[in-house]
Image (cartoon, rainbow, N blue to C red):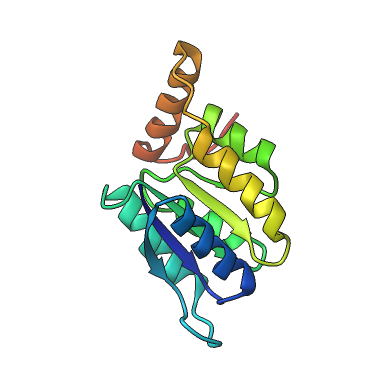
Length: 153
């Protein structure tokens, strides 16, 4: 599988992630610093998410200090369903019910053991294909196409 990975800082967690992806025989397109410098998280997140949206890679993993900013930035790219996951059960639910195609991770709140659990849940969990769930995903896609209403009454 081809995975786009982005991060604004090159931390030990990033090294563990890249190593794990290689062990799992994934091919990585990496966006982020190579050394101690940092880069702007919206920039590298967009680069990774755009590859997912364009179908150039199968999925994405985006990271920043909390994971929240990367999740928000990724979700601004049409066709992306990014989920910030801090545990394996959240990753499993994001895949099953939300058909998440981008995993967002916190550089400061994710340890190596939890990362491996999250990755296993993420890659081992298929999207749900039941009728109700597919209807919900259709509603999400419709939200991307429709301008927001002026007000909700």
